Amino acid sequence: MKLLLLLLFPLICFSQERWVTINYSGEINDKWSGATEGEQRYSYTLNKTRYFHYDVGIIRKLSNKWKLGFFYREIYEIKNNVRVEEIRPHIDAFYNYQHWKARIRLEYQIKEIPGSGWRFRIRPNYDFKLFKNFDPYIQNELNFTKEGFTRNRFNTGITINYHHWQFQPGYLLESLNKYPWQHTNVFWLNTKLSF
Image (cartoon, rainbow, N blue to C red; front, side, top):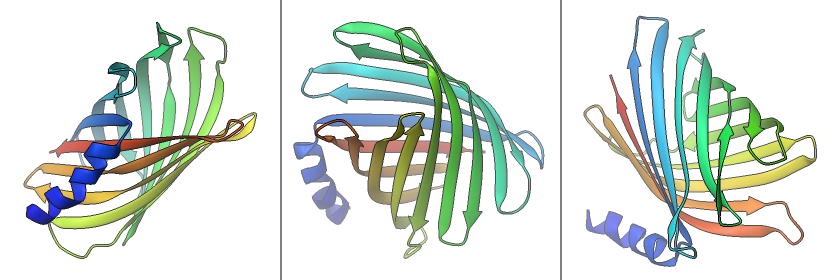
């Protein structure tokens, strides 16, 4: 526990934002499951919550390695000191094999402000599987729109398993492809409850 606190202390102190995600998923039967998610993003620069989304969907198991999910997401975000809404239906393909996982997402962004359109995201993840209940991981998410490569999210952290719960504290570096590139340091805590 002391090692975990030692690792998290600089992440919390030097991050520009804090993202907290809570996921819940449960099996409907041997082929179908349901999932929901809420996420809040707090900006230390703005000194307030700048983003919130909730997500709900169903997932179909295709094989031992592949799943396909259909989701609906609503987003509320502060942009230029105004709260704006976005609706984002998306289809996710999930791949899981040994140490590797990947999520491939195709989404349509329906924005309250100009800029609606398609976005493609791919997020490979590598679990080191060093310990049963305390496992380091590394992942990277690439985002593409009709303009090309627009965003990258590099994330590293630790997965802690406890019964039906999973906690993933970590560091995320979000980079936006603007001139010059814009970077945000994030302390990220993902919490999952599964049945």
